[in-house]
Amino acid sequence: MRILSLYWGINSSASIYIDGKVIASTHEERFTRIKNDDAFPQHAINYCLKEANISSNDLDGVAIASYIQGFDFTVLREAHWNIKDYIKEQKEYWCPKFNENKALSKVEVFSEKIDLEAYPSKYWKENIDSKTRNEEFIKDRESIVAEFLNIDSSKVTRIEHHRCHSHYSYYASPFREEKVLSFTIDGMGDGLNATIGIYDENGKYERVYQTSEANIGRIYRYMTLHLGMKPNEHEFKVMGLAPYGKAKYGQEALDIFNETLYVDGIDFKWHEKPTDSYYYFKDKLEGIRFDNVAWGLQSWVENLLTTWVKNAIDKFGINKIILSGGVAMNIKAMGEIAKLEEVEDIFVGGSASDESMAISAGICLAEDMSENWNSKDINPIENLYLGPKATLEEEKQTIDDLDKSKYIITDTFNSKDIAQYLANGKVLARCADRMEFGQRSLGNRSLLADPKNLKVKETINAMIKNRDFWMPFAPVVMDKYVDKYLVNPKKLVSKYMTIGFDTTKEGYEAMTAACHPADKSARPEMLTRELNLTMYEIMEEFEKITGRGAVLNTSFNLHGYPIVNTPKEAVYVLENSGLDGIILNNYLIVKVNKDD
Image (cartoon, rainbow, N blue to C red; front, side, top):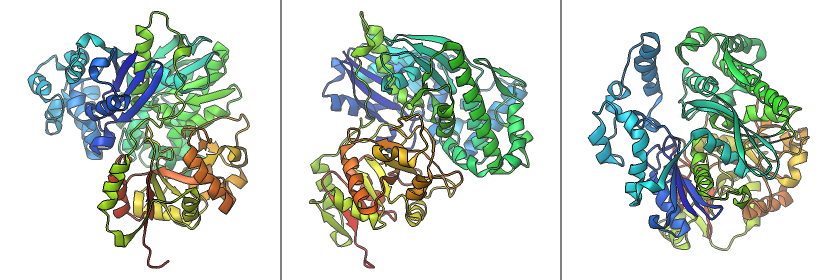
């Protein structure tokens, strides 16, 4: 069975599934170079078909994640919006709608943002003036996708949003052939923002709870805006800011959030339901310092989620859990859930927000198309190295374009050479093997450095990433050092940087530059030899030189751009930043430093 699946929204993505295995998955942004691009994922689709060595005519089906998507949302291209645009949305769209009961059209409010040129341009232009355009587009996406692929529209199916979320973490998890409790929670998808489901020993899924009242994701989004950061992109910055707040000063903010949503059993209910998710809080939070607002918001989220999960485990008697959806990207909250006595084991899929549905929508469709479905026929999603890998010719062409007087270029290098550079304080970036799927680099498109060296942290912040001063980096930790470096009594496995952990004294000392300065926590990628052999060998050599079993890791990109895809993009970052060198599949390129 050959199934193409896609998500068309903020961080549009595509994936290909063949005979029980996810073959390839990637994001449109990696080709267009527009961060979180929400355009139709045509480049991602073409890559997936090419990687699988099939044409669209070979497909048995195509899955689109989510039943519902609005025409107006799609042509307004919110991935291109800036902070001022989101503030305008509050002032001129949401506030009049909620507080003045005005029926407004977003395309009228944002007429200057309408993009009718992106694919499918003809469709946008023909329907922009239709009064029923939003309702029609929900179904028309099937024919748009079919036309792009030149296949019959009967092959294209929409899959429900939260089912996609749940299936993603389940099929990426190690919890097969046993009962699993599944939680999904996000801003909103197909009219819901939270669900609970149960997978039995055969992988059969039953949803036991759903709601549209769990407004955690939406409130967090607009508190991101309140703090002067970009919604749908910078929520992780608010999470990183929160540990700098103090309970003594942040309690006032927490009290304000506590006046609204609360958990009753497994249900989300309201003490007082805000009329909107921005002005209601903006007015009440006025005068409370930014870090304490972040502390109060994050504490509120953690309290809600831990109570919800605890109560659900008590109710259903299943203590192995999985989580998905945009709110599951909050690694601090996932860490607090992991600490619960009731939780025996926990798994959060890598990059479990909406883009991951591009992967799971195909699995859902395979389930629907099978006469005798057996979940055991689905291969586990063992890693997220599902994107493109550069060819030797691509790398040769990139090398030919370099000014050789500025670089030391070698095609005879090994893991020991790389480790020695890192131990000497150099910051190297790796653009090799298949690119990772998701928002977090996992070694193949990563900036790497000595995790103990605070000086390289300053270099990365100031000269490469232009990162906010309060934001931590993250460590890759070798499996044999997990117990030494992380407080992890349950022996949890987190190979995709999805769960926050406290560090041990030894761990913090060994990887200070890769931990959060305020609370000494870490967001680790726990690395095994099987997961990424080349990275593991680099770390083994680094361990021999330094005695440390971790390296600092952050995504390989310039500020405001997506993670690099090609050798050409890798060299562009090298030439336009303070990066010391790059590691390709076949070449090691290091800047000539006249001071050495």
